Length: 259
Image 1: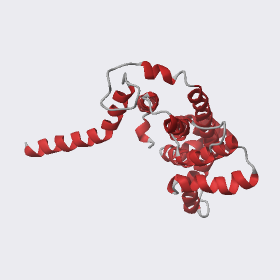
Image 2: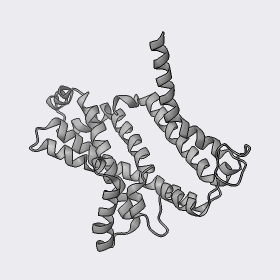
Image 3: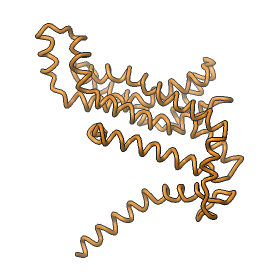
């Protein structure tokens, strides 16, 4: 009995630690006051409504959506063939390649952002949006390779060989047999990459420029001037969006099987 009580207590503390900040942000976003505070000064939805009226939020949201969607698609276009080659062929230095591919998530984002700014944007004069696109693609690539590799690991290779023996070309077997069977892993990789890219801060902080900022960076800039609950309201909306995406992915794709 005491063991069960201690287990429940520890579980409650862990849940409070994980969910507590989220609940505080939701409560602060519903405040009727004019400054960000907790506990809230009354209840109101006016700050939630204000989020949709701030022009900079709309523009930075569009930028973040562009980078998250197309950066993840570009990462998948590179990551799916890479994962296939690493899983189906005995390549020299394959483990080294896996380590190099994983570098963007091993190296701190601040270092990645500073290096790209110093050695790509400034000397080469690369446009800000292009630098952000390349950076987000590189940051999402490790997730694409790892998740698709996990999906390929669950697919028997003899199915593909049977298609080749029946007259299908190697590329035809890949598109007709392999891709349909790993589409769940690819979709899971896309969702994970989308959420990761959309919420990226350290790299975007270095590469954002005048007129081109992602939503998290725009929120930081907004808080330097305005300290009202609209940032809390936007944070709550983004959290609900991320939770909804992951919940749908888990419900229909079995997201936890790949990550």
